[in-house]
Amino acid sequence: MSMFANAVACLLCLIFAAFLWKVKGMLRITLMMFLVVMTSCLYTAFAGNFMDPTLEYYPFRMVALTFCVLTTGLRENRRRFMVLAQTFWLWVELVGNVSLYQMGEDAPWIRLAAIAEIALGCCFMAKISKEIEFGLIVLWMAVWMFF
Amino acid sequence: MNNKVVTIVFIALCLLLLLSVGGSFWDGSFDLLLHDNGSWKFPKALFIFWIGMSQAGVLLSAFLLIMKVRIHRRTSLLLELSSLCSLVIAFVFAMLYSGSIKINSDVYSIGIVGFISLLFFVTHLVAADSAEDALLCKELAKIRRPLAWIILPTVFWVVSLFALDYARLENSLWRGAFFPIYVVSCVFYMGLANSITLLSFENYYNRLIERFLMLCSWFMSLLFLWLILLKGEGSVVAFVFACVVPQLLLLEPVRENLWGRLLVVSCILFGVMLKCDFVVNHNGYHFFTNTTFASASLMFLGGVLFVALFFGVRFALSRFFENDEILMGEESDSSDGEIPDAEEKRYYSPFSAPEFKVVRLPVLCGVLAAVTYGYFTADWVVLAGPFGAYVSGLLVCLQPFVHLRSSKKRKEGGK
Image (cartoon, rainbow over all chains, first blue to last red; front, side, top):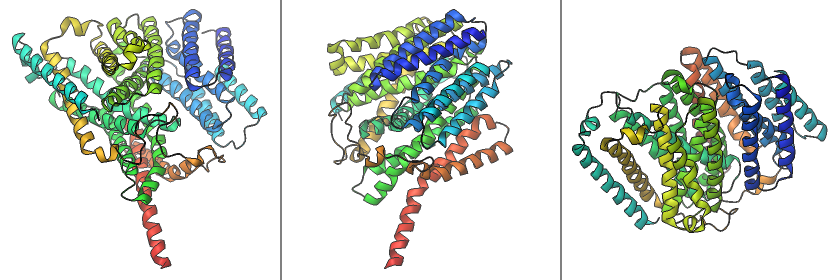
């Protein structure tokens, strides 16, 4: 996927998270998540080329990034869910990388390491201020765009 | 437990099994049942189905516990027990049809998850029986969530690797990053469907789980469409059974009727079984075009064995399942009869939560054990993780007994 399409995907994730912040209740959030997954799949289908094996898990990476950004807006158990969301992202990336490796393709291991480091860092955060929230979102976007 | 429904279902399954075995004489497929030459692929599809079921219950139970979704303790116990029984059925199939079902290190890792699930179930069971020893019950209740923290990533890891290895060794069509995600989603979906079935046998109806099942069926539909976009094919019949039929739950007469609910969740499980058949045979209509009475016999045999084993154990452990201290019936979506956790809303600074204190030393030992195991063996990718989880789980389960013993010694010293 091109750099521009990748950037648009990142922007879409932020928009999804902004919508999800406003929704209350687990079931409504799940319903919104359904729409998020659907939009991510449609976007990947239109913006990408299916011959590229990295696109197989692209929508799920988008969902994982949305989850991560979403957790910054939580009021309770923020650290726990932040780490859980990043673990989900880590799992999607790990599974993707292993499958790419098995197919003999180049796997972005640096991205995996970067997410693992941020997740580990989040475990140490005592109080997450607005500035740290912003910093985390920027870090995730940087991982998405540059690794 | 609704004995009437259980008896009707069991007798119906037995009759269907007898009919299909009789039919296998008629269509000449009886030989397939007795002589396994490795060419008959249906046992493998069933084996994959039961392996999925063996992960589904414990995955859902651990997930709900970690996410702090309040469900009735009985629901969790039923899910955990169903996981263990399904693993036994998968093992029986693997023993009966060793020609078509190849055992590799992935299956060993599933065995390890089975053992940790057994620990999870037993601690949960004993913790429910507080009439015996209140102190032990309290100590065991403390290790439930830490155990769930160990089980959840292990199940994700094991199922993902199972899917990746299947794609690598058996069918290259499934190679790619999407297949493991799809398999884990299917396992989760099976867990939800299974919980509704088991609760129906208990005369319960959990609206929260039913709504999640509906939402999950939409997610599964999306994943199915994504699969078609990626691979160019998918089992339409499986999609109809697993994703379209559940929409009937939107209708109140179906939703409120016990047999209606049972029929819908049976369709979901059948649909997932068809998906397994599609994964193995690479043909969406393979089950219907090539089915023989022998295939039906094997399918019903699994069902009969599961019902007999599950309800046999359930009946033997009624005392634990129907503990007086547990609220009977569901009051609302948010009430489940679990012992309220007053500490839940308290803020803990990093690495100071009680769960972390329970889990830190066992996990450290588990990681060391995994590294040591990986150093000495060649198949470290598959088994090192589950082996580490096995050591961690075992050490977490030993903690309550160590605590009890030390507090007893302290008391004796005080006297």
